[in-house]
Length: 156
Length: 275
Ligand SMILES: Cc1cc2nc3c(=O)[nH]c(=O)nc-3n(C[C@H](O)[C@H](O)[C@H](O)COP(=O)(O)OP(=O)(O)OC[C@H]3O[C@@H](n4cnc5c(N)ncnc54)[C@H](O)[C@@H]3O)c2cc1C
Ligand code: FES
Ligand code: FES
Image (cartoon, rainbow over all chains, first blue to last red; front, top):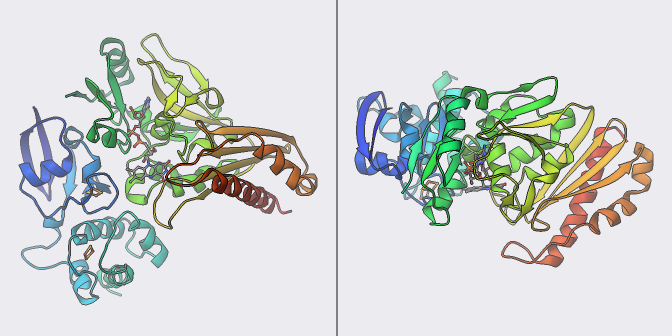
């Protein structure tokens, strides 16, 4: 067992957990932040995407002790005071989700992209999203939603 | 179950290597965590090397391009250093997995995993790279052409880790082309790297075409001679590989694709030098 201090969505946490679990299990089962999803637990699907020290990462590919001292952002931090972010709103407007299982991961990959690059090209969006799989939408609405949200966030 | 170690200095890492047996180094974890999850890897210690500042550096030195063992592939790609002679690193870096995993995955991790299909392995061979290691008694320099000994096997000792990968300076160009089953992320069916130095030295290397990546040194050609000798060069390169059939491709498909990709790489190198 190991003590881990980390910041998630601007809140500080102190957790006592086994050393061999992943950040995904830490978030879901120890912090009860179940917005982050487990699809494959093998780095293949991106459903578990969070922002880890400023970069999008598969939470299933990070060991919990690696998160000691880390700053993590999850889907629970995206809406502010119950108001959806422009990115979330854009996903709804452009039908960028159906079952919604991939959506928390999609939003976090897109959030990391827009934080680093507020005006991405369509190709840059595709590259940033290539680790996030969706079995429902066919991807085009997701790319469009991110493109439009980027314009909206910049006030374009 | 393992104990997690997170050294902050090279000295601390060296102590752990000396004192702890059955230790595994953790870089990006994108191979190691899968191994732990599947029960294929058992160890008593995991040593995360990403908090050692020297290992997280990338830059040009007198020796050449140096990439620390803790540098993520995306940081390497964003450094702007993978151009000219080192262009194959940008090609292969972009081909490895996907951008999410590349925020974590490292060059040294790909090398030390030593999977025959590792996308960075053919490029490191054609660029004459070496790794510098740390051991309880110091460390050594290992040319990567002498590094791989079999499927997921290499010459590192149990108490030895890679500190950095070094690509010697030089003018010229290089490229890497990969064939995979789908447009999304997938391991290579075949990968081919080529380097063409300013003095005309031509090298090709093949990934996923044998138990280890294969380097073929082809000699010195001026660009027009290279174009004229294209088919002979491909014949010679192909005589050096012996791929197998597996879930990703049959032996026959691999052989056909290896020749096709090698030809493509030669054409790309010639185009880069303006011929
Ligand atoms: C979904 C998915 C897709 C993938 N696609 C590809 C692909 O297309 N192409 C490809 O080549 N690979 C692919 N991989 C494999 C993997 O991402 C790469 O091999 C990656 O470069 C490994 O680097 P890492 O830093 O994550 O290594 P780690 O997992 O940290 O380490 C890998 C191995 O090397 C050892 N090691 C790491 N660093 C050192 C060191 N400095 N000294 C000594 N030993 C060390 C570790 O102990 C471990 O045994 C994929 C993996 C996943 C999960
Ligand atoms: S659950 Fe992490 S990538 Fe699928
Ligand atoms: S909306 Fe169902 S998986 Fe993407």
